[in-house]
Amino acid sequence: MNITIYRIKKHAQRISQSTIKRSRLLYQKKIFLTHSKDLPEKILLPFIALVRVQDGFTLHRFSLRNPELNPFSKACLQFQQNHNSSEKAHKILHRYYSSVQPKNVSEWIDVDKVDCQKIANIPPLYWKSTTEHGLDPWSDKPLTKDDNLYSDIFRYMPKNFPRIHQQGLFGPVSNDRIHLETQRIINLTQSISSNGYRRKNSNDGDINVTILIRDDGQVRWLAMAGVHRSAVLTAMGYKIIPVRVVQIIFEYSIRTWPKVINGYFSEKGAKSYFDHYFHSEYPSIAKEWLNESTF
Image 1 (tube, rainbow, N blue to C red):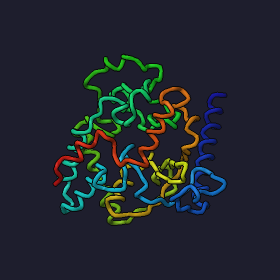
Image 2: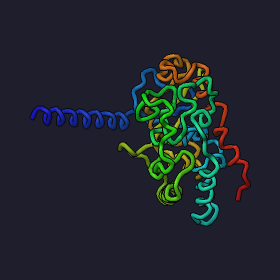
Image 3: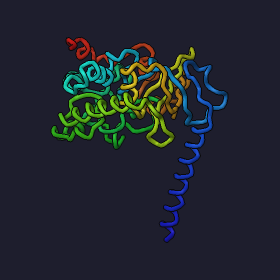
Image 4: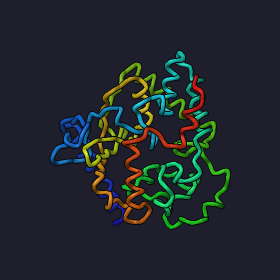
């Protein structure tokens, strides 16, 4: 009986907290966030901000500055340019997933192995099924389902590990997964073409983002949720979009980032990871895919 009452109370608390967050979103003034000086003196998360698409990143490490350099945006472009034919969009993603297949964490995040020694050699098969943001040095989320399993155990995982339910950041993935990603992009493109982009105050009603702020005030945003939406909006020519800011990371706090404290990244490695979002537009491993002939 006591356990039941406890569960009801916890559920009520979650509902209450969710309601408070939604009401904050409704009544807070929207901020046009292009520089650290645009932030209010008192920051209450989450909040809605207008951001420049060119400052954004999706698929973890791909910029939205040029839709031709982002696999999801490029698939959307091909769908629009070929009279709403799904074939070209599917080929773009098939080529991407066939070409971009990092062997380990270091190869995906472009950080020298010496600066992320504890996690550098972990293969995607072991960590890809968890949230990609567990890789972020400022994240307190575990990289794997069990942080105590950083060992050679991953060598013995089955080769037929199911991929259809994985994140789809990169290959290899099943044909069903490629079809699923293609269809999501097509459905979003058709919906936004017909109705425009409409955000909502519901839990899945926004593109949820982490804001990165460099010491000189420059801003970048990373899509935590709404990866497909942000990529499609880019391809459709949107320049400014509303997002829900759920986290803000400052460069000056690098020494306090969880994965720096626990030794997964050196300060140099964490800085290199952070700087990618200000100096690069895609992970190095994607160069081969980008250099291939286009349609």
